[in-house]
Every structure is written in C-alpha cells, then in structure tokens.
Image (cartoon, rainbow, N blue to C red; front, side, top):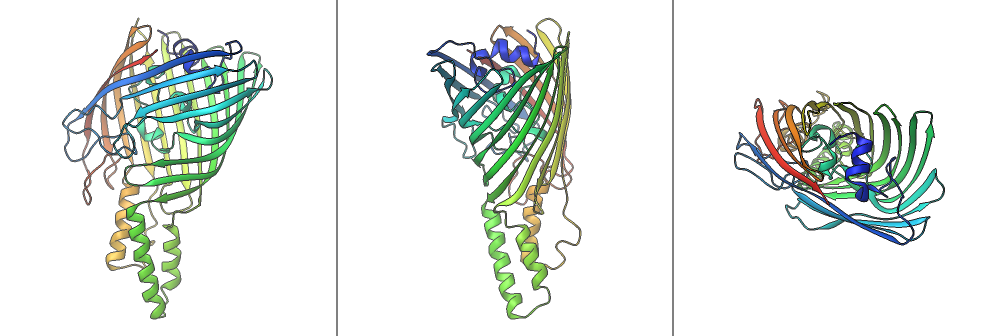
Length: 417
C-alpha cells in the first residue's frame, strides 16, 4: 500500500491518530462516539559483536551475537471518546522496554481536546513530545518505512511524552495545508543509567503539506534540563573534595576548578532542540530527511543528527536505503588543565560516556505489505561508532568499541488493529 505520510496516517492508523493533534487529524466521529484501536511490533535483532549491546537509547538491555526481541517489540492500545462536536478525550497505553528493562504498560497519552473552530484546537494532559517530524507516531512502526526511526537522529532526545498543553492552528492556502503548534510543559524519563527532567519546556512547530506529496517541517524548543546519575553524583563529590582542598591551600586554581565543576552540575541548565525535515511521496518514490541540533549549557551534550532516506515501491514491496550520523561536540583541549589525579580520570570517564555516543550508519532494507494492516520488514545496518567510545551501544564499564564496525540485522512484523 502507499506509504505517503498523509495517506498512511489517515488510511492505516486513522482511528489511532484521529485526535492526536497532527496536521492531518480528522474529527469525523459524531458526538458520544467511542473508538478503539491499537498497534504493535514483534521484532528481532542480532549483531556480529559481543563487545556491546545494540539498543534504542535509554534501554537497559540489547542485542549482541544472540538474537534479542526486546529492542523493537511493543504493543499499544488507544481509546478516543467524542463527548460532543467540541470536546474529546484520548488515552493511549504503551508497553515497550523501559530504562529498567521492564515492559510495564504506562500511559503514553492521556489528554482532552477542545476543537474551538475548524482552524483552532487546544489540548491538555499527557501527549507525545513533538520534537521530531514523526513524533506523533514514532512508536507506530506500521506507519513508518523502516524497522525503526534512525537512532542517530531520534535518539538525541530520549523523552517521548510531556505533560502540558498545546494550541494548534490549521489552514489551507492554495495547494498547501499549513499548521502551527505552540506547546509547553514538563517531561521526565528514567533511562538505564540516568534520570532526565525537562522543565519549563516551550516549543513551536510549523508544517506545510502540499498536494504533490511534499511535506516540510521546522521546529524548535527550549527547556530547563536536569540529569542525575551515579557517575555525575560521584563526580560532583570529587569536585567538592577538590574545592575544599584548594580552598584550604588558598590555591590559585580554585576559580578554574569551581567553574569547571559548574559545567558538570546538570541541574536546570538551558537546553534547546531544533530541527528541519522534509518528505516527498509521489508515484513509487518516497524520500525523507531530517537535520537536528541539540545544545546544552554544559560541556556535555551538544550534538547534531541527520538522516536521509529513499524508498521505491514495487507492488507490495518497498526496498529502501538510508544514511544517518550523530555528531557530538568535543571538550576544549584545555578544559581539564586545572585537574589532576583521580578527579581528572572521573571527568574523562563522564566525557567518554557522553561524547562516545557519536556514530554513523548506513542501512538497506525492504518492507513487504503482507496484509491491509500488517507489514513484514527486514533491515541490515553497518554502524561505525565514534573513535571516542561505544557509539549508542551499551558496553561494560571502562570498555569501548573504538575502531569497530558493527553489522546489525533486524526483522519485524508491524501491525495495526
């Protein structure tokens, strides 16, 4: 079946997406109408290395030379209730591997929506965090061409939902359907090795969909970021002891060390995330691409990610290929100059765990639409982690995958109901 963004959402996930707030959402149901829908993926992943585990960023366990079924597998259900022509409510429960390695079902969405006019709507509650082009349905793999969205881009923000509100404006101008989304709220995520909180988040997304199959999107958001982890706590304790010693010694290094310590105190620091994206679906061709930029007011975390993808439909089969890369900015060469001994080693370890996440990937695969609501996919990736460390793989403490190129094979069955 065609994979065109507008068509795929409307035709294959229509009930699921009906009130999610995307630019193509359709409030066709009458008053007091209840709709139930769901989606799922059963996937398997295997690699050719035992030195690291292939994961979606934030997961606790992943794939090695032994097949792993938890990287992509998930199940979601959703209910939408239309109270009247103006008000509706949506709840979505999703089960997938979390940062603790569990699959406990949790509310991914739980919001109410007021359609104030044909052009304006307001939502409040828990919603998908709209950082990316396909944020509204990033877990509905049936609506996507690949086995999973490119991790080098979509792994930059491991937060998938937020609690807050948004205002959506939609209008048609000539051959284009235009939408603007102003949103804000609070997000948190418990990952395998850290906890992340985003407070006072504010964002704006602009989208234009054209009749010729072209979709353009630009978005930007800012927030106050806090990160806690055992490594950061130990590092802050080390800084405190060092500052205490330098104070007693009246050392001239004290101001430099205090300034450096503040750079690693990730509590309510300024963070921004911006991105541009485009997709074009016409005839048998499907082209997609995004470029994203993340900045954090710290020595950690500034990054850029991008991907470009091409697919060509041949009947029910769509071969595809994509290339993607995550770059993370390094630390100034003189940043650690005031330090020495064990503290310098701790700082270097934290930086390796962060800056070592950079990697690049190219992939080929195919999607086969075996039924009107199910697709079989296979995908082969060659991943080159950064020379600084392990890329997005999980590795044992003190280890890295420097110099390795890892082959990853993934297969999945995606379905909606």
